Length: 219
Ligand SMILES: NC(=O)c1ccc[n+]([C@@H]2O[C@H](COP(=O)([O-])OP(=O)(O)OC[C@H]3O[C@@H](n4cnc5c(N)ncnc54)[C@H](OP(=O)(O)O)[C@@H]3O)[C@@H](O)[C@H]2O)c1
Image 1 (cartoon, rainbow, N blue to C red):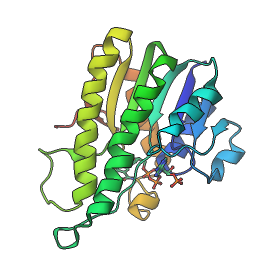
Image 2: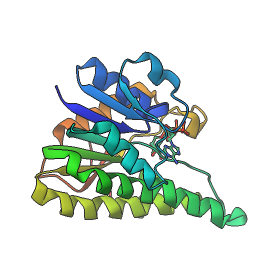
Image 3: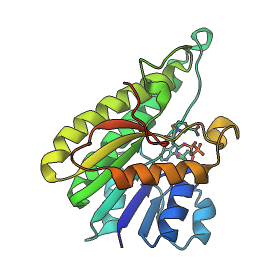
């Protein structure tokens, strides 16, 4: 039985990941900010008051984990505020960097000592962070923050590889959650693909950017 930590597990893709990992028998620990949401009924351990933009959140998780070590860490928390060229709000852009870029860096860095040798880390990025794939522009803050988290992930993969830990950057597909206003595939379908990607992750393919459907994405 693997011990899995899902950061941002109270709704959307994170919640679907928690359900499927629990259903296959993993020991699931999920974090959320305040709204425990559907996690309450899942029967998984919940760590509340985890805002990935706040440094003290790392300490809160460490204390809750105590001596537990983690086999799989998935960072799902993210925000999208969709700035166009005509509507560049720098505070909103900065806020997306805090959550989407610095959040995963803060969490993975702060929890490194809880990762077992052979552990895996998945950071949910987005295809819209791909420079090569940007055919339309828009979403300034979101795109920039997700491009930057791809760099975070590749850098972390170099740091973690000597510790025997592999890392994948993940695109979940277009998924019907609050973020997309309900457009796209079901969170369950996306989570199924993401879990397959994590199952296939190893030190030989660490530091790559995967679509949940199983193909590599361009940077
Ligand atoms: N849906 C898509 O089509 C799509 C496509 C590409 C990538 N993604 C990425 O997939 C991930 C999950 O997205 P989703 O579609 O499931 O979105 P969602 O339903 O809007 O859920 C977002 C999650 O992030 C959490 N979160 C937001 N701000 C946070 C903060 N400051 N600290 C901690 N947690 C925070 C939310 O918690 P609260 O309930 O407390 O707000 C919630 O658990 C995100 O990283 C997103 O960028 C989604």
